[in-house]
Length: 151
Image 1 (tube, rainbow, N blue to C red):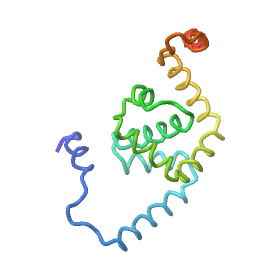
Image 2: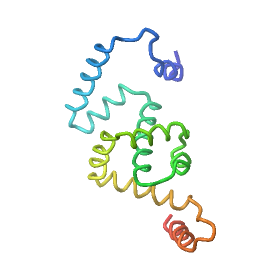
Image 3: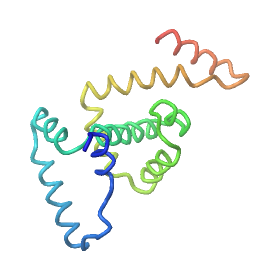
């Protein structure tokens, strides 16, 4: 079986559902395992073994979409920059509005890390440059010109 065939197969969930109790126990064990990994290189190796490249990218995009939405960017801008569907971005926004406590705690960790802050700054510079100015708004035009010059 080729790698692409494996990737397509992994995204499917069995038609024979687990009991709620079994599912909850499995998720609890999975979360406990992740929480115990405090070495970045070990976590990287574990995720490489556990997830396909497509699954890793999907999770990273969802986190970044949540960060950008939380910072006030529009659905359209997030969809364009991260190449995500409006439905996926809407579902992330809905979760943020509904509760989003998990996202918010992770944001705090993300922004404490200087690499996370540098990444979001780079994405924001790009978003500012590709978001066209509002027609007739001098301040919006100045923001756009400044953003283009920083790229």
